[in-house]
Image (cartoon, rainbow, N blue to C red):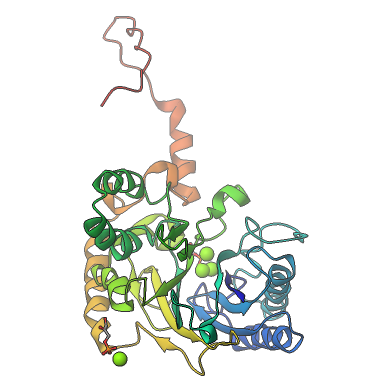
Length: 364
Ligand code: 13P
Ligand code: 13P
Ligand code: MG
Ligand code: MG
Ligand code: MG
Ligand code: MG
């Protein structure tokens, strides 16, 4: 059968600031997911949160971008929003950026990552006798948060063994710009199978103003023709610097955390969770999941992230510590610079300023 894994995530309200959704909100989304399974829309569903973002992980046979599946997620997020409003929680409905999208909800605010593939282990599918994958869910992060680890997890070993260095450099030229370019999917060119799907929306571009950080999700298949989980998650030991943190405006390390972790640390450290599943022949999740970052091995990385975070924040507003002006979301900074424009004067030393050459695009 063609099986689809759809992951849909939204920040629709949280307790005591942007920390975590309330139990009532989580219960409402879990109940909605259970109903969707009972009604036959979904085969299976799991609901968890990373920071203040609620993540719904589903299997079904309706394909990518299915209106009914997306509408189920949207109405579930609306239900949670209603609860957030009722209890006066912070940021109620924050990621629901448009009014009632009629079909699929890509571009409407929630993060969406989906993969559809032939799932037929009973016929002992030679490509994929067993399906295992994990879901990454990030909070307080820019759209390119997974660029470096996804590249290191997939492209490094593949490019070395497949001898395609020319693409290696082209890819890195783009991926270095985490706010501008983000990996959307990774596909095996030998089998045509999709290995990874990543949500890479820029919420600022949809909403027209800052409405919280982009906070991407990713579905990553592992084992067999794909890398093993340890190969895919090893790059997260770097606690690499990304755009995110408070007001999405800082350059801070990404800290791997267990699922259902609240944002309560110092600053507003970017977080990522990683939950692994297997899928039964009927498309249901394994009886439990594997929480990859809930392991003492990751304590060292969490410590490293703290240290890197403190080092960066001790630099305050200067230079590399914050995102460049064009990416800055602190309205006070923008306002202050705007207010100063009229007070600048051009120094001419008594001469007329020389006409500036038109840039050709060839300049270094
Ligand atoms: P085991 O299946 O023996 O646990 O090891 C698998 C492996 O080689 C991991 O990459
Ligand atoms: P989210 O609301 O997207 O989690 O980010 C909030 C933020 O900008 C922290 O200051
Ligand atoms: Mg929030
Ligand atoms: Mg959030
Ligand atoms: Mg967000
Ligand atoms: Mg084993």
